[in-house]
Amino acid sequence: MNTSGSTIPPAYITDMDWECYLPANDSEGNHTCFFEDPFEDDPNGPKNPSYYSLKYQIVGTLFQGIVLIVGILGNIMVVIVVTRTRSMHTPTNCYLVSLSIADFMTLIASVPNEILAYYLLGDEWIWGRFGCAMFIFCQYLGINVSSLSITAFTIERYIAICHPMKAQIVCTVSRAKKIILGLWIFACFYCSPWLILTKIKPLPYKGIEDKVTCTFAMSRENYLGYFFADFVLFYVFPLLLSCVLYGLIARVLFTRDIQKSSNAKSNGLVSPHDSKKTSSNGTSARAQVSAV
Image 1 (cartoon, rainbow, N blue to C red):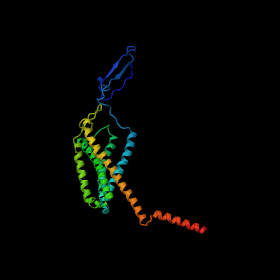
Image 2: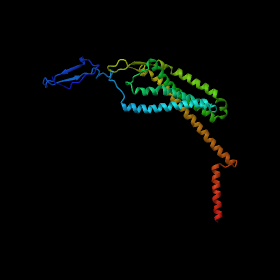
Image 3: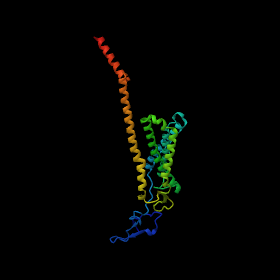
Image 4: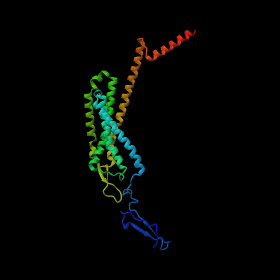
């Protein structure tokens, strides 16, 4: 019997899923066989396994690898240089060390997994339930501590520039270390719910039963409040505060420059630029007299 349009079924499809029909206007020798997918009309049913293309793997690995290597080396060098150089033990550099450690944690908790995901089944997770909780926790911890470190650094710069007399008492290395320790403790407590807000579940792929993915433990609607608090505490508030403080710093520096220039003129002092200008005018005047 000649069978047109027949297809070899996948290994995970049983023979009961295949049917043949005989159209009324066809002869008995032209049977058409087709496959009826039981999940074709079910959006929540299992899907076909998916993988990244080779080009996507190469490009993604290249760029993500560059980010990972440069980020790791740069942050490690900052920590080593500041800790081993006594003259660099300043409050500002303490906040920079905290920022480097937080960035390093974020890189380690996210980028290697992204690179590994290019070569695995779509959304596949291989680190188990503990790894799912810890990696997500470290990602959010690093991001939040980075934001807090930048905010603390901005406040320290504002006090040092706008209130230099007060900075002698407030902006000290020991105080900076205590503030950094407090920021890390607060961020750890704030991010600790992620240790229980994640879970692993089987991947909904046809014919695959031993693969899992790392996902939310509850529906996404239950996380809106948590995400909104993240957005306000670690993005909106630090951004607005930084804009205000840097605006005040710019105003103070601009005012000081005007005062210095006015004081110099009132005391009969001439700036190097004005002196050079005067000297050039005098030289040209002498040249004109000589010419006459």
